[in-house]
Amino acid sequence: MGLRSVARQFLLQWGIRNVRTTALTDVRDLLQKLKPVSSDVPLMRVGASGDGGYLIPDDLENVVACFSPGVAETASFELDIANRGIPCFLADYSVDRSPVQHNLFDFQKRYLGAINNERYMTLDTWVESSGCPDGDLILQMDIERWEYDVILSSRPELLRRFRTIVIEFHSFDMVFDNAGYRLVRLTLEKLLADFKIVHIHPNNCRRLSKMRGIEIPPTVEFTFHRNDRVANPKPVTVLPHALDSRNIQGRRDVVLPKEWYA
Image: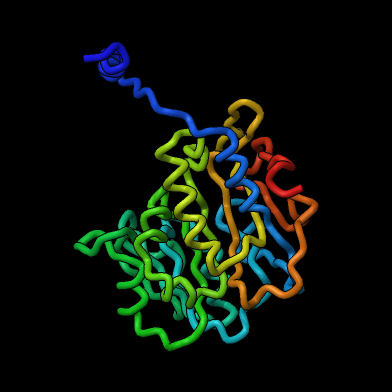
C-alpha cells in the first residue's frame, strides 16, 4: 500500500476524508455559464418576505399548474400562486399535510427523488399521475440536496414543460471538490440547455465558502426561465434585486460576489 493510501486510511479512521479539489479554471468556467440575464419580462416576488418567497418572471398567464416539493412548514409561495387561480401540487414526506390549506392544493406525503417507492417518487411520475392538463407548468423546489438527483433523473421533455423553475441548491460549495463539481455542473448544464438563469439569490443561512479568491454561497436560489420566454436578454449588472429579502431576518445578509454576474 502506497504512502498516499496509508494517509487516506489513517484520516478516515478519524472521520476525515481527503478529497481532490477542483481546478480553479474549472470553477471559474462554471461561474461564467451561470451569469444571470434580465429580459423584457420583469421579475416579481411570489410568497412572503424572508424564507419561502422567491423572485420569478411575471409570466403566469396560461400556466396550468405549479409543482412544489419540500413544503415542510412554509407554503407562502404556493398560497400566492393558488390565489392567482393556479392549482398547486405539493409533496413532502416529513409532514402529514400542507402547513396551510387551499381548495387548489393537492398534497402528497412523498419525497421527490430519483426512484419510486412508498416514500419517494420521481418528478416524471408525479406530473404524469397528477391529472393536470396539458400546458406550461411551474416548478419550485427546496428539497435539501435531492434537487440534483431530481433534475438528473427527469426527462428533458418533462423539464421543458416548465416555463419557470425555481431551485434552492444546497451544498453548492461542493463545486470545490472534484466529485461535487461534476454533480453540480451536470445538473446545471442539463437545465441550461433549455433555460436561462434570470435571478440568483444567496440564502444567508451560511456564510460564503472561499477557496483561493473564489467565493461560493453554500445555499443559493436560482430562477430559470425557459428560453422561448426570454426576449432581449441582457446581462444583470446589479444584485441583490430590489425585491430580494433576507431568508433569515436579523442575520447579516450574504451578498453575491460580482464575479457571479458583473
